[in-house]
Image (cartoon, rainbow, N blue to C red; front, top):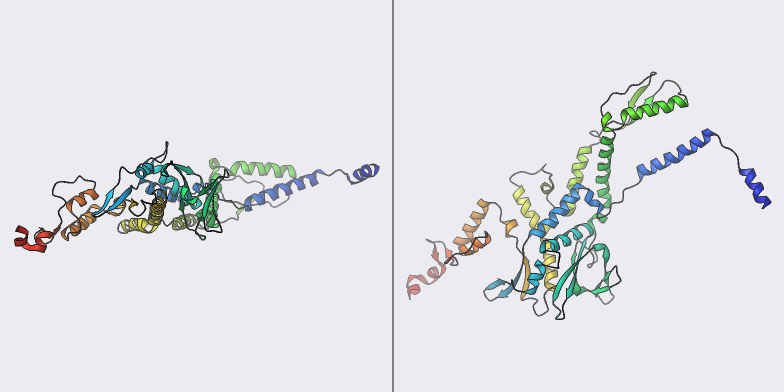
Length: 405
């Protein structure tokens, strides 16, 4: 104990104010450098702070949510819509508080951000689905056993079989779990965040560039503190933007940072918007990037959006619903199908030419055209015609004599 007291007395000494100030400045400088160089970690929900990510996710989820989803039954004459089937009603009203739009919206948002969308299926005693529960992707973990059986483990510890979970899977490398676009492209998105923070700091500081103040002689500590306080008060903040600085004692100012226009600040923001649109496969003009868009190509880009961007998601949803909502004896006879006519029909002139050409070759009838345009059918509109004064197909095949007989 005496040795310890002697050691403490020997090591303890008073420090000067200059040493204390230097130590404090060292700590402050170290924290400042760490804050300036620390990378921003982008989470899936945090990525929504980026305007382009928000726009892409919103477009994907809301577009799929607005598409009608029909249940069909194959017949000898083609197919018939099944409005009275329990699965049709389940998709329209998945639970007590959600609609079909909410169901598709949830699946698409989860898949676009986390790479996986989950909906749990509750069944009745006849093994028919009766209720759907939306699950956050963070609550579910898919597990593939050595016997090639897929299960889903919930955060509650419950283990669900594959048949009781609707799983909208994004791009996957193992076949049973999708990869998060945010996680895969996190480094790319960090550049967008950095550009966004740079612009925020630039304008928060009144648009003033950083630099150095040169003084011909040495300042006393009191004068240095006063000058530092006055310069910050004059230069920082939007209310001081573009205000001239009052320098005294022969002091001069020299700017050392690169202006935003020289650093291609605006071009970087535009490039990142295009990059994010590329990640999600969305035409740039749909997220307000009209730099290369024209009136002639926007319509075709819209159709490409449906064919190459939406279609893979829609096919996955249809196949999941067919496999897990329909019973085994119904599979193959019944099937779900999205209605895409509203997205693919183009403008009025294009639709008119398409319908006319299909009608005069006997491919579609007048009532089928009216159905595509959400118009009521009329009596006699189910007859098919071919060219040659718009005669019926039966008349063209059998002739007038056979037709009369």
